[in-house]
Image (cartoon, rainbow over all chains, first blue to last red; front, side, top):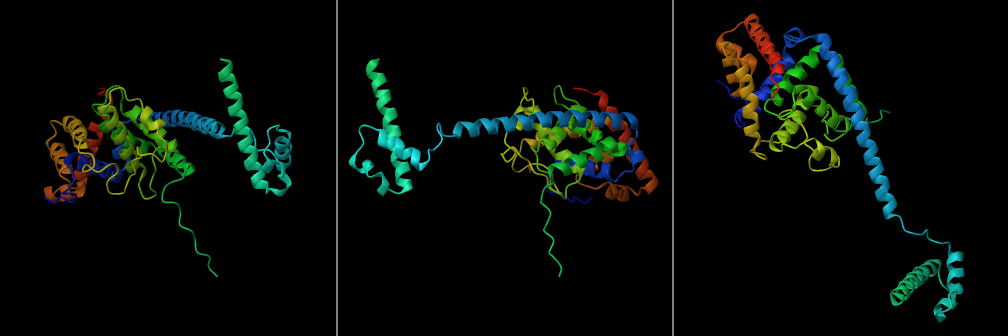
Length: 132
Length: 195
């Protein structure tokens, strides 16, 4: 006896061989004991249901991705440089450096804005803590 | 000047998977092959028959939870996917495809199929051999009483090809075809054996 797939266990070999037998037999042989019309109806039913389920899954996945994206979005949109300058100028406790805003680069202005904003938030929360 | 053609992707695209499955369900011969295979693989799976298993395999393919290598036949691909579903269902009684369906498509649940051996190799997953014994046992049981078929199944499990078996037994084409026809009929009878 020849064992073309000698390293494989019997179950694996058997299923591979069965697939090959099924693939190479004629349609008449394959349809032995089956009702051709019912098989096509069954196939269409299975495919329809699989399509619907797959569609629902894709929708759920798209929704999940959307919610992850919105969670990762910053709480406030970054301001324009002009808005950032206006905000900084309006702060009562501005440092000397911040008063020379026109000499700073746009990136530095926005960076300063972020720092001032986070300091402001921290001050607010401290105040709330002290109230409580 | 000839423009070099770009190679097609290694795996089928969603529309190609869909087209392959449409071709399958519209062809009664192909459906008969797929259903017979599904019944064998579903043997011993609680609450799931061959039809359920085939439907779940279609779902996993359409939902892109399994990548389909271009060179793998529809029947070969279905075999790999159905085996992985049946394996999980046998080893996890509350399995409802949830693990597969919730996992990302590029996650580690993906089992690719190769033209030679679809699914995970037994070396990577020794428990698979236990599962397979029940598939083989189902067919051995189905062919009981027909000595030629009993031998045919045994020899297939030993890795021989159908043609090789026929040659070794000195069967002519007519006798080999008749044996395959009887095997096909016995596999059709498995549909009533719902576990």
